[in-house]
Image (cartoon, rainbow, N blue to C red; front, side):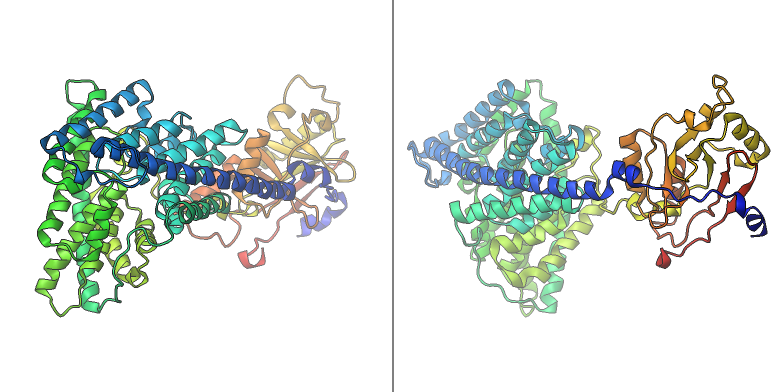
Length: 633
C-alpha cells in the first residue's frame, strides 16, 4: 500500500518476546500435565475396577445366600433355584417380606437404593457433579441381594452398576479431583461392574459412551476402557471364562432370513416402546397410593409372589431362562408364558420402587418374544433358513436397544455374552430396526424417563465441540498497538483523530516492541489519571496472550482461568502481534459455524488490520494481511 509505504519509517517493529507470557500460558507443559493427570486417573480407574470385581463376586454370593435361606432354609453360597421351593401357596409372602425389608432400608438408610441403577447414576452425573453418597456402596448391593434373593425378578447387573458408580464417586470425593474426573471414576466403576458380571468389556465401554459419559475423548475413554478390561479379567478369575449365555452355533443367515430378522426387530421395537410406557404407568399408579412409599416394595413383592406361584421360573435372577430361550428347545407355550409372566412380575416390582435393575428382565422378555416370533416365521417361511436361536438372540438385543436406545451396546453385548460372531449382521439389522421404531415412538427411554420428569435433560447428540473446530486466527479482531512511553494525552489526541479506531482495548509495547500488556478504553479515558503520565502506567497486570493456531475452546478456557474477556493474539513464528480476541469474536465464530450446519470455515471471517502509534509521533501504519486458506494455515 502506498499509505503504508509512505509511513513505513514510523512503524514500531513488533518483535515481541513471548517467553514469559507463553510460560504463563504454558501450553506444552499443560498438555504434558494433562497426560500425567490422565495416567493418574487411569490408575484410579483400574483400582476401582479391581475392587468392584470382588464386590461383584460378593454380590452374587449374597444373592445365593439369601435365595438359599429364603427358599431352602440353608446357608450356602452355591446358586439356588427359587423355583424349586416347597412352600406352595405360602411362597407369595416371601418376596413381600423381601420388599418390606428393602422399603425399610430405603426409609432409614438411603432412598437412593430404590430404582433401576443406571438412571440414578445418570442423574448424579448430570445434576450433582457425579457425587453419590458413600453409603450406597454397601446399601445398594445388600438391598438388591435381599430383593433378588427373596424372589425379585431382577438381575445382578443393575445393582452392580449402581454400586460400581457409587464406589467410583466415593473415591472421587476422597481425593482432590475435578467434577469431570469424578464422572470418569463413576463411569469406570459402573462399567467395570457390568464387565465383571458378564465378561463383556467392549459392550461396557459402549455403555459408558451411550448412557453415562455422553462423550468420546481420550481423557475419558482410556480410564474407562482400562477399568472395563480389568473388570473382564476379574470375571474370568472369579466367575467363568466361557460365554455367560451359551447357545448353539449359529450359521450366517440368508437374505430372506435377514429380512425376517429385521422385521422381528421392528416388532420388538414396538414392544419395547409399549413396555417402557407400561412400566412408568405402573410407577405412576404407585405414586397415587394413599400409603407411604416405604410400603410400596412390599406390595410389589406380593405381586411377584403371586406371579411366582403360578410361574416359578419368573422368580429370582433367571439367567438360566435366557440360556434356555437361546437354546431354541423351549415350547411355544412356555416361551409365551415366560415373556408375559416375567414382564408382569418385573414391571410391578420395578414400579414399586424396590431395588432392582432392567437389563436381565429386558433380555428375558425380548429373547422369549423373539423366539416366539421366530417360531411363527418358520411356520410361514419354512425355506427361509430362520433359526429360533438367532431370532431369540435378536429379540433379546433388540429389546434392550429399543428400550434404552443404547444401540452399539446392545449389539456388542449379545455377541460377547454368547460368542456368536455370525450373528453380527442380523443383530445390526434387528437392533437398528428397533432403535428407529423407538426413536419415533418415544421421546424418552426406559433409562431417561424418570430423570426427564424431574427436569433433567439427557444429552442425545454426541458431536465434536464446535469451538474445537475454529481457530483463533479465523475470528480475531484488528488491534491498535501503542508504545508504552506515549503519554495518555498523546494517545487520547491521536484516538480523537482516528474515530474509526475507538476500541475497547489497546495493546501496549515498549521501545523494543516487547509486549507489555493491554489497557482498556474505560481506564484510558478515566478522569482520574494525570494525562502527562505514560500509558504503560495504566497496565494493571501482565496480559495473557494466545497463539493464532490455538482453538477457540483453548481461548475460552484461558479467558475463564485468567478472568479476562480479551486476549492479545501473537504469532509465535515471527512474534508479530496479529490482533485481539474477545468474547464477541468467539460468539461470532460460533454463530457462523452453527448457521453453516457445522461446516468448515475455509478462510478468515474478517480482514484484520493492525494500527500502531509511535511515541511522540502522529504517524500510523496500516497492515491488512491477506486472508489465508485453510490449506495454507
